[in-house]
Image 1 (cartoon, rainbow, N blue to C red):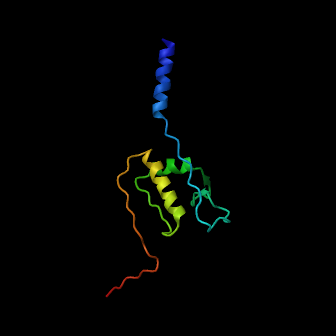
Image 2 (cartoon, rainbow, N blue to C red):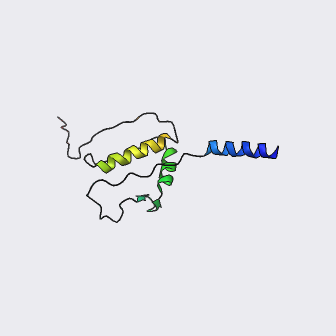
Image 3 (cartoon, helix red, strand yellow):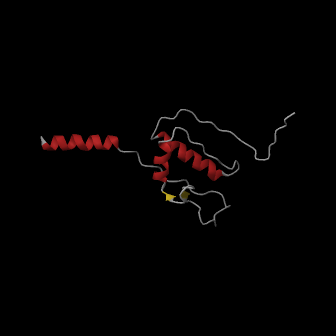
Length: 110
């Protein structure tokens, strides 16, 4: 009886655990390889370094996530895909919006 109860508890615990994160994608671009923060996740409010697991846990609780990129940087695209897949495994996804904004664009007010 104890063995059966222990087996059921272990099975339930396994069902509740989060799936393991895929490793971060390898850096592709030759640009920025010398930067001291390459591959680090930094909380800009506190300056604390986060693990990928900590980042995903924080973002999974957010109602909306906005992720920026430099359009011609393949590493940004790979990281966005990694993050989208990681979040999908932890929460239902409502929608994905991809938009290109030009920093130099100006509007006429005439």
